[in-house]
Image 1 (cartoon, rainbow, N blue to C red):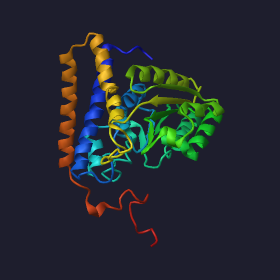
Image 2: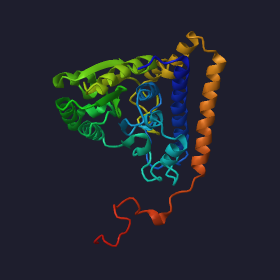
Image 3: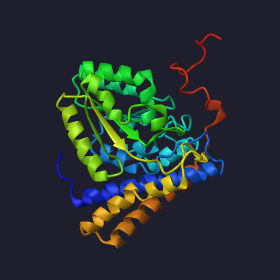
Image 4: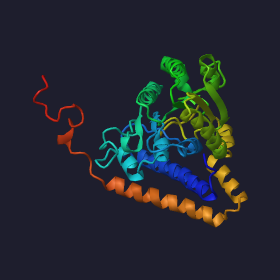
Length: 328
């Protein structure tokens, strides 16, 4: 991969701010009762999404989990359309039918978020197998949390991906908790990367709150995939500053733990790096303000968008546009 310019790094800084402010807006909408269901925010995990997706082409495909807003935005989905989908509006990515946990934007290579833990892994492997079988050069990326490693689908998918040398990048955002349960309480395996060994899969565990580390490690992994030396498991140690879902009281985490991790905020860390590179504080403030305006404008437009017409409720449910041929 070409060495990023200072301008490239500034764009990634802006991308992290867009995700952070987007999640803040979703939280406000959810607190006001305007979001159907329970959105799961990726606040604090922005470096993983941005650092990995910075290497993806338009043709590469992405599969994410219930905590997928940041990944979708980092892959290139429109702010307004994504927020409109979360609000259940007609202008949303899926016409308001999918909501927060089922974001799909095929035009940008986002082939699905899912609320089924580990449910996206086999789909990513399937897409990678299709690309391999058809001689295409695109890769698949699957984002998942450490809790997914307790599901059989995780191990089944790793086995087949290794056996068939599929071009799929497994990205574990290990934020230390499977819903409300800490890693040490639900698994005797400290690092998810350890699971790669039995399948002879290349792997690395990195600081997922360090954008520089994520970017460099993702470049190394994706280079191997594009040279038919996949799959790869990248474990990013991170921390979600929000609860498991909006409204989670987080009684399982101490105030001291939360405070310690706020000091490791990936945006603030990268901001310090850019200042050391000579970027002025005022310029960084302007980037953050631009991101704030983008999110605010998207929120205003998304909120003003119409809700789906109730008469269209059966559209996109059946393959046939007409119901005449469907018995019952």
